[in-house]
Image (cartoon, rainbow, N blue to C red; front, side):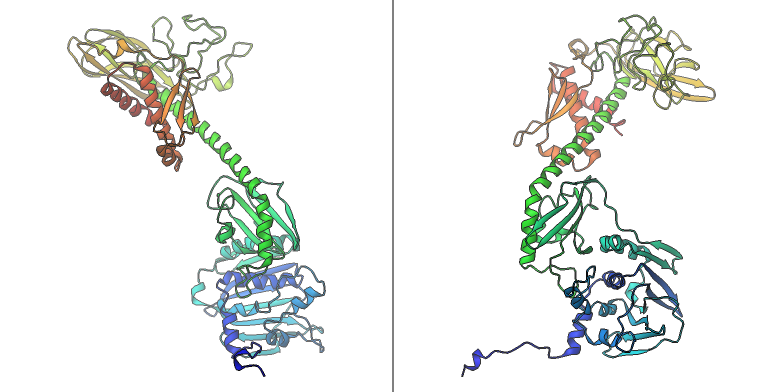
Length: 611
């Protein structure tokens, strides 16, 4: 005889009702419970399912109606509610699966009990073989059940499930929330079963249709399925711009188990947590925790899944890296346009003789330098020349005008300027010696910043300070500085068909010009582009590559890493690097304090237009 310490036995439930209570309350999500009721209808081959949210006699209720096969009948031809109520944890569906019936999801026999997390009373109705309707009534936290004929008419096949009153904490359980949850939770089940699900929210007076969730992004068609010894793993993955909505969900047989696979420690790594992937992985052979059905058993099936997905992780990481690079290039192009546009606008206001980065030396086809702008030609984009009364041209003020005209020498429709929208004075800021002479021009532009060549009037005046004007009603005029140092503010008023625009220019008059103009030596290559060079651990932020006319940015610098967290901050950071390189290359040999002054000046005028 074996010792008492080695005796063997079998486990059994000591308190059946306590076990049932634990099972009924194990479902922690009322939406999951509703999804299980809908799945029961799909398992019963329903083609149409209607979910009704309403209020009656001051109580909120939830009703689910389907046209499926209904509750299986007993030997008397009556819906076998007794089997449903007395075979908890022994679902008939499990037996049907063993017999080869496909398309059935449930197997634990506990789904109906989850109504405890939704409401107080469950009424389940189904028709008999003779057309008579019966119903079963169950009450929350009560062990009994009732089966009785239904007195009211039941004008449809299938089943009707009613839960009332809903629990107090479910007042916010709207039709939209149910719609969105079912669209993701039962995505493939709805799609494969071709079932139509309608939500009638009588409280909100809305009718909603549940459509299977559509993923966004570029479909990674090379990742469709993976064969394993336990079955096939199905993948539907999309690559997208990074965002919180990008999640890869884990499904089993078309029903979502885990909304985001990253919540599993084994998948808390790239590519799954990169934020670029969206989609689903359907694993028919994984085993679920019965109570909530949103947990995974870490058994041999789960190990098989890990091994299967590890095969494609390197390729997915490569796809994510390529998407990152493409996105970075797109952002870089966008930022480059913004930065260059901001600097061009700033140069309109700054002394042209001191900032020559827009002085592109090429000329447009059919035009010779200093030709005065003959008919049929346009200036090269970005080109700036000194203003002269003879030529009457300011080069590069518009980005929208084409370099050429068509064969008939008529402007294309997108070259024709519209109505007056804004005006500016060239230059908008300058330094003059006392009694010096400098020419200024007002430029009228439409909403798209195209130059308006005629059809407007100009009126010049000195708003503040001293000096004299050679003209007061022409686009170009000469200003003569006073004999004493000071600040003069010029104002030009441009009028066209009732529209009035004002522009101003600030002139600093000094008795001795700074040596900065004498030392100035611009590159004359136009605004540079920029590129990246990864130099971790090195302190330089950027440098100017004169040969290629590029600003090289250290994208491993701590400041850059901080800046890229926000698109607007990245644009401002690159703009500051541009200012630094522009100043260093336009003012060689200047003292550090003078360079800082120029950088403040340039930054002030550019950041206003960095939008």
